[in-house]
Image 1 (cartoon, helix red, strand yellow):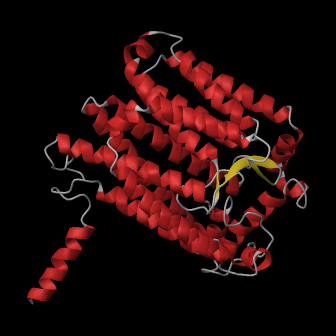
Image 2 (spheres, one colour):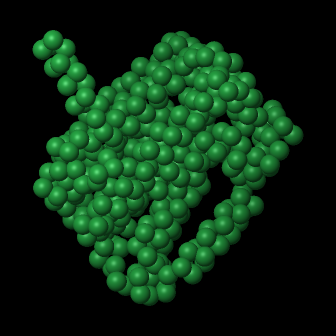
Image 3 (cartoon, one colour):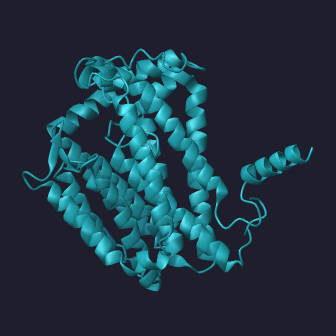
Length: 396
């Protein structure tokens, strides 16, 4: 009986959501692990056909994804040890490195081009995408800026001009790659953090209108973006051309119905749906696990975003503005990128090359997202220490 009681107590200790004596957010950690595990399963299933064709190894991409996940977990552990004061102190260097990496992509012989887009830097184990690091660097920069200029941003009507000049610099470098999707993510992050800071309401109206106008101008002045947009409006009008990806993605969801065809039984991944293990991994999820599987993924992502926002709220209540803005910035990033990826697969928005957080295949995305999780865990840990090492909220 003593043995089984110890086992029972151990299970309760490790499955209890954020116990009172824990110095970290156990819920956030479990969500991180669960999403990584689901991502590995789905990448393995979706990449078998393309691995067999391109690399003569059906599990080629699954093996690489396993390496990325292991490296991401190690990276998360390393960055978990970094105090938040270091991020606040070195925000200029972090931003400067991000800009240098974005510039390096454009240098012939340094940046790597894939499918007509020059977005990657070749690293030994994977191709690194500086756009992912740029998102994290921008959040760090904005958090520091709004902390130092808090009263100015809240009192002046044109206080958003300076931060949007920074966004314009990064967005311009991303558009040269070209990468409109990541540029939009930077814009949304900035607007979201401005809202949390409490800037004037009319600034948001003007910024949204400006963003919409710039989006349509960029679409109308680019032939390939215009083809993508027309393919989004009616993908079955040209199912073998501009609507090829979206039409096959919609057919994948249609086949999945309520409960899906079962793990590994997707038809669309058999070279019908390009990028099935990266941009359109949620389409394969919908085909193999149905509407219920998609609901589960929405719930997990929403829970992750909710925890991030909760950590940000607690930081602001402790008057730790840098930590609070940082946590909210990460939450807006994850929420919007997940919404765009799933919305793109469902045909709700035009196709963009954005991954589903912690699920889609890609070393850069997994590693940078893992660093973001480490930052959230570190913020929560430091908040708990300020509360004397006890849980802050009764509803945990």
